[in-house]
Image (cartoon, rainbow over all chains, first blue to last red; front, side, top):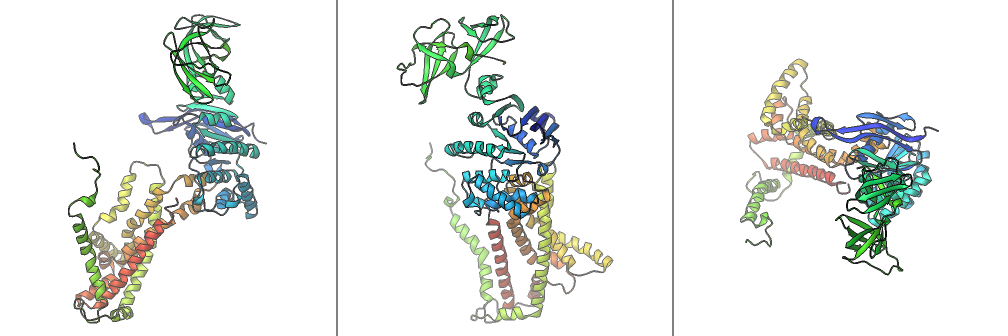
Length: 364
Length: 273
């Protein structure tokens, strides 16, 4: 076997244009992607995730840095010599070929004999459940079918790494959900390393073994979905993945059991233990809306008093926008259960409790 | 305020539109129609109708000089068309499959320049150039005419080929490279099959343009190298018979056929892309 990692990206930078007009699309990114991993590059459009994917594919070459595929340096290798295949956002199926010809193209270009190509194409057709349409011209396929052919075509040559460039963005919601499951299944069945690019945080959380969050060409955080959601590295990650409330606070006291925090309004909160807290230090607290507990009436000790400003009912849950005494407002998400009789209306006085275990200190 | 119910511009509502359009079509096509009609005249005149006959067609297609000129025209048009199309295909790939750079639009202009240069200028220039070559090489065959025709046909072949390349999704070529196709094999298996209709269209256009060229041919040809158009021009000087109409009619049919093939070829597959 080869290397411990399928892909190693070492200090890779990619710039477009030159002089004052130069844009740094990928800024000093270092990243290791493991064998058999479902790895997602997540970020808003223009964050550099697609540029990074193109560098891995070999459609473009980095200005500086190195790319290692299975232990072999491929920084300057052209795309047709990399054991990496891509599922394109537009699918890019060859319109003058049938489904089977599309799937067999990579093997044909690898000069495999017909006796090897044909069974492999059949196997791929089975894998994506398209056996019946093998001889159909690809132009006659629906979006979902084209998607499957694109996947089969990219998997047929058994690449070491499969790149997927927002492949689900053109599908409607229901089909997208089906394909998410399908992609997970394909990845598990083939054992190929998947590098998946998306701007959809829900998609990333659902499908990935690990996620890399990118913004402005930089890598902000890499980790498992749970880890990134629960312990976002900074404010951008916290608000890009899921929803987040931010509260400025001052550390009143900190020891090995926790911290005492003072909000702008003068109210106090208990915070979690952290290594580098010093009394007098200002921090930003982050808490997810579903982690705040809402109750009617005057606040019990340790809870914050507020007034319901607005609410939105979304079926499973209700969102409350609660204004605190100092004017700051918090978003609270409460699950709707049949046993909860009490609903709050705008203007109601409520008490919010923010458990110390759910609070996070963020770097700005 | 003005009435905003329907203020979109429609040329058909302009006064006199229908009249001007009808007049233009009349002026364009009536002379051709008259020419075609008199090809079927039984008499000797090209303006005095004396009954229906196919005899001028028979006379035209059995005339050895007409056949000779027609064959020469075909040889030149096919050869020049192929050369021009090959050159235009390469030029189109070079100018579309590249990141835009300073000087690219100058290259477009350079390739299309022969469209703008007056034919008479090209004719005179080639006359002088080739007369020297003829002396130096001693060769005076059809090669000069073929070379001259190929040269002015390049921009005509270039236009449809470039248009097709520009409309072609270059992700397909990237996908081919991604699937282990070397640049040459990507071209052969993906670009070329998809470009084929554009190439055929380019060839047909070049072929038709070469077929009816008079000015440059007249300057470049050596003795006994009449093409069909220059032969017809020579005949007119000696007085005209409906035989000329018959040749022109066949010519017209041929051109229409070529242009139709061009349109069908170019329209094919552009829909399902």
